[in-house]
Image (cartoon, rainbow, N blue to C red; front, side, top):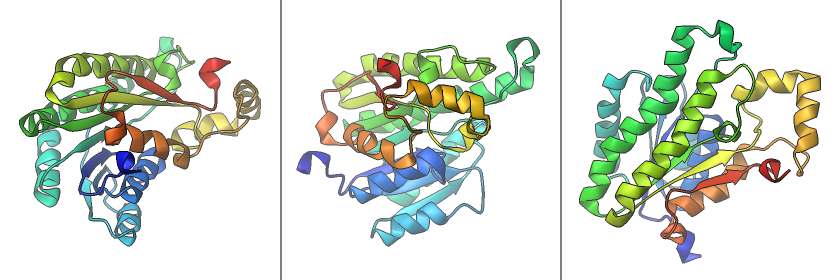
Length: 251
């Protein structure tokens, strides 16, 4: 189990105060990591409390990651609080559901700024830090819409296709510098982002009918994959998009 031990490691997780990010934060902390979570909600401290209850250090950073000017401050605050960062999880994301013909320009820009631009620039900022240290793990959160087109979500789909691209591009440049860059593509998960779909009985039933596991995923379902990609166990994995989807892509 030493391959998966994160004792002494530190992680920065965006969108880490709830949902998939919160589940990943708790999973990494359970494996021994100290964790800084980034949230846009100043009142979100529950995940921090749960991490601290596990005996790990935790810190919450409040920032709008859609504003590029805030990103360097996020990295500096995390470094001050944790000393260094071994693991970056680019999880923060939003989705705007509108038919492509009616998709507002602001919706497009909001989604791309958070889902893609923030992920790249945080990777760039912490990548420099990791290159200096000679090691690091970057985990991007992709989607089933990294592989498919979706319906009424053109901006989200574009951002998640691009996440796979920058995962591979950064892996090509940084694998030889001791940095592993990979991604997790969650299947259909029970989170705020899928609340509208789950509330639509017909759409929800059609989705469940295609999932061999016959259920929506949970935040806990991503913890094992995140621990693997954050740990020594994945030292020879680079540029991979790992599907955790209940079998959706195999159907």
